[in-house]
Length: 111
Image (tube, rainbow, N blue to C red):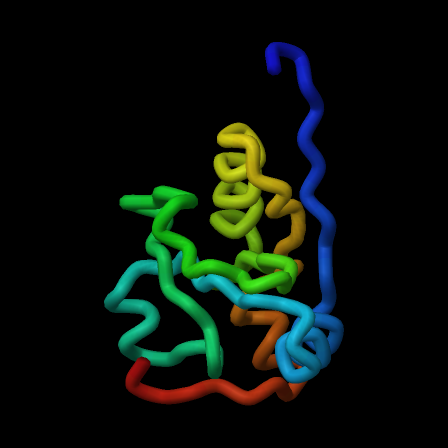
């Protein structure tokens, strides 16, 4: 795979919310447990980037995996790691939780 170019596709908060609700996306939050405990994405799986292993992601059951974090940086990193390991997980929530909240999307307090 040397020299292979990986891409990460940006999705807006509304695209992600609509996709999760329609059963097209599995949202995977790569923030740390203390961040998730304060405020979380509804219906997201959590696989912290600090101990990230793409095999820890629940079976997406035909859905596309979309990574999310606080601002959009760690979600890109998670996507690139997954792609390097041969998984076609090339989507992330651009702007992360900050953009999600700005767009008025729902959050859950207390993880």
